[in-house]
Length: 474
Ligand code: HEM
Image (cartoon, rainbow, N blue to C red; front, top):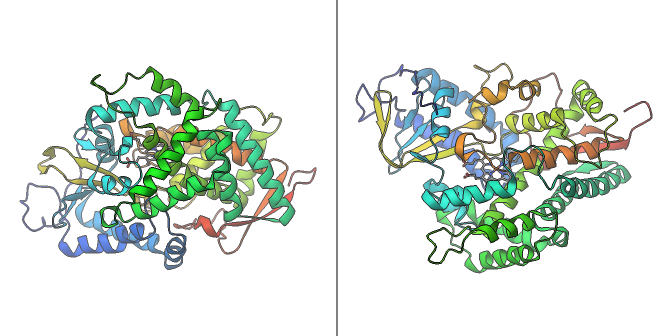
């Protein structure tokens, strides 16, 4: 484990109340600017359930662009930090350097807990016992269980055949519809995507259980307001009962089947000294996390539609493969990774210190929120040559994996345990959409492959012209 402290030094006068030997501290004015101009627009777009109209507005107003400039200015004045933000009642620090990002993520959950105050407030609305908001022994057991079901680290899940079958069936139907109407847009895509998700997680019988996912969406909308919104206990109960009914079937080939078999191996909680695995809470998180993955997949399609060279390379990767069989598609996965790097679905990674934590010459008090602004670190054009262009090759040659400034799936012991499963699902859906069909990006979200890519790309406005490919290729 690396515990490299930041080597950055403060270049500005220390903030109020701090001594010259402590960590750089933003002024109250800078703090207000960061909260209002950078964090505020992210929260307004909905951290747990996106608000499409705000996402659209943010894109039109260029808030992502402005907030990148703001953090560049802050770093120029204070160094990599961590830069403390003097927020009354909520100690916080912005983590802006690779070594510091690494330290925070590798030293999760002690002393940097995943279960920050904000996350407990938000996720408590629908998964109060989810692994992300658990700590101590409960977190350990739930994480082990989660990794067991999702098969974290394995590019090909042992249910890859069923996942392929499901993803192919839904994507073939989707592309036929799109080719029929000539257009693929968000509403048609997301309907098919949710079918894929419900079938993979809960089984084929859950395919059309829109009520279940609508209830989850309603709970997530309340979760956007964290502690400010009242808990909707009845709705939460209905959602969990619905999930439990699907889990009881333990349908062959679904994650529900794996949940049943791993739960059986887990000793009962009563009097055994072990923690409740809370499978319905974990499933709540998985379904919530699969939702933005739909946006990631559609943005990846936009990258391919805009870039004939990249599209040609992907077509070459697909050529001659039997897509009805599970396929590892490294380049297509790398395009999905670029989509989530360029437009991260977790724009702020949060940790919270569980004890006073020494950092260089300074100390962070217990309860400090460590904020890793991925949306900035991934797109900082003062330090990255790939800030505004797609570079899938960095995921193929391993350089992105070594780069702690790039953490779309987090890193360390709290890394996203669904990473491989979702990359496999997304690449299988994309491969099917591309097979024998071509896509042209339609207005309003248009961009040139070689030009700077937009900092905000509204997935809900994405539209593609779709047609069958000619024998010659496109
Ligand atoms: C493109 C899609 C996804 C992205 C970009 C993504 C990214 C992330 C990130 C950044 C975190 C860390 C959050 C934090 O520390 O606050 C995380 C955690 C997590 N993700 Fe994902 N995720 C995706 C899809 C999924 C899916 C599909 C699943 C499940 C099937 C999943 C399961 C989880 C779980 C359980 C955690 C909590 C891990 C822990 O606390 O130990 N994710 N994900």
